[in-house]
Length: 485
Image (cartoon, rainbow, N blue to C red):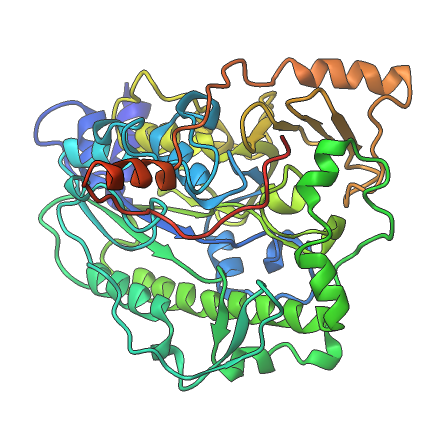
């Protein structure tokens, strides 16, 4: 009992706990820990501390990683904006909701009352946000006690340098002409004002989502004559099953980029957009460290999925390979994480919902599927046997462990990669020997058992509504590559 009392006193002095007025220690902790929830659109693993691409310049994201625990093997539930966010925020995997792609609406299959944000609002948190959380915006207005509203911006002139659908250019003026600057400013304002109780503050940054339109100074940080192409291999698709080849869609974006002879320009533009985003993260961190909330706020930073820039003859997301599925995940938890922690265990973003609830003393709803990674936040080297699972379209899945990636498509086609020997997934080992067959069988045990049909695309619902004299909106305009079916 004496040791427990001493621990509580120490935590109180650190600002993690306030003196107990009433209720249990868990209730007190829940009232004191705020949440800064930073979501980034299309940010892949090209951040400095993850070491995937030495050309990237992300000193502020790397600085955030040093403040807590960074996960070097963190993966999305789906390699597309809408289903990735719907899964993370609902606690239900795509195969349970039928939200597999951007055109599959989440409303109607995911009750607002079951969302992550709603849990915090119901627990008495002030839920604040600006930018993109759900696909198409913050989503579900009733979840928010206060919002930053829509970002507003006069359209500045852009020197458009796009290559087909790979859109980028130099924007006139400075950072104020990019929408994410307003989102960072909103976060800074919230961190600088007094709050009556705990808050859940969401900042949903858009960049580096296309178009990669940012000021010239960010392009200058990555001189074109110094740009190197990402590692790639000619004939990389030769050992893939037909479903994998279709998913790559190499005759689309990649063929146009090759024909243009401007691959390096596209890489430069993505790096420039990432550097701009990093600067906005830095502004928020500066404000956070100066605020009165620095010692009692959980930070959860995540990219919604990865992005290809020509690896495996593919651009954008929309695949089950490493480039499309891996993204940053950083946690800072007062009294729990140790600065500079690095966790090499394999996790997916389904873990975010239950972990945030646990850390703040909020009950985890029964419908939530993900695993609580609090043990890894406390000890990044702790044992962990649960792999990451990613889904793209009905009954197409990838299972990722620290060493292996196993993919099985709806038609039975398979891929298996040994990341110890093959980090860019150039050699498909599926079916090559009995040894690899044993690995494949073991990993297949983790494939989702529930694969419901996709929710009806918004376009079809809108057509039906029009025929009936009604109107319905479209939550998102971005389209993916064709289904591997």
